[in-house]
Length: 195
Length: 222
Image 1 (cartoon, one colour):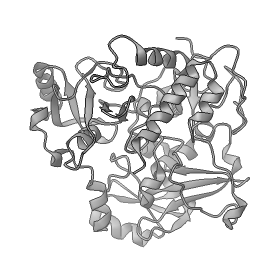
Image 2: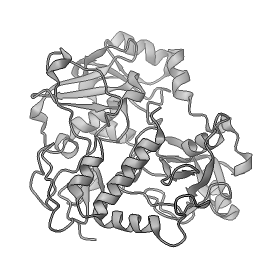
Image 3: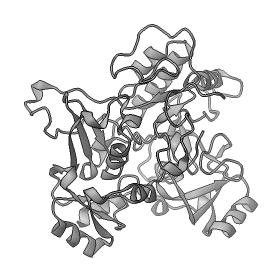
Image 4: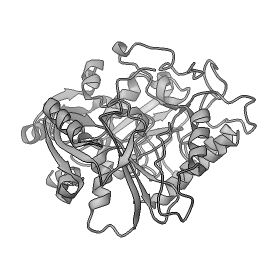
């Protein structure tokens, strides 16, 4: 797509200069139309439906927990549809999605949860390839970082997960194997209290 | 934590408005984010806060979205360039995070006219300072009147230019991928590094190579 954005990122500033255009950019107009069409398109649950089709990441898509813009950061993302909401909550990292999903105090009913199949999506800029989070295979403890540092890489198939673990390290887990303490986000808070 | 539904619905409204053809109205609905440079290839973009209400004749294929600087509020009672409290809904113009959610890391840049940009951490502040026009929606480094970082030890605001940072400690920072906690004195920074690892770096010594080493963003170029 020919860029109409006046930012330098689209001016093709070389990455080596370190000044890669970092603003929140995106295919707002055209992609938004597509995303909106997807909202009411076939296969997408209308309000009140029991299933929800995954949405796509847009320029302004922000992490539910911390506000980070998903589009500029690497690693698998997550989205979660609560039963009482028509739009998904996006998460910039699988650890954050899983933390939300597995936390003991979670009381909102979850209609659907998606992560990305990193056997197919580009690690640095994952788009699409959404898979059911509960059916995915997870690699924990690999050397590849996500948006928020160490992450859980997600795959649709066990074989791809094992291949990834062979290449980058880590352990292959099923959703049922993931314990809340594995996706604890309070490390930062604990650190602060220790100061 | 703010109700998740609030932000979700904001995004939905934004998408709907964009689809309806009014990108300007969509930007207004996006809360603290806005879209500068409404016209494709405009040299400097629209000044912050002057978004046109009339929809562009043709929607550009891509738009940049940045968090706008928040204007000075004389009613605050604070001098225009003094550090001010971080609003709960302020967004970091570099990464989108809410700086108010982790105040021990927060930073701010105040422009000559008193407008302010808040940052989630010293890292994003320095990424911003390296390339102000890129992130600020039309302002330049010469517009900056004051820069403040939070003293990690005391929580007080300190002049970012005089701060001492620790690079390579076990403090993950808001983005959990390494950061540059700030201290008012070299001695305080050293004490921290003795416990948490890392080395002391004066603010003036933060260079492009250091920022690149800490940059967790995708390396992609369109």
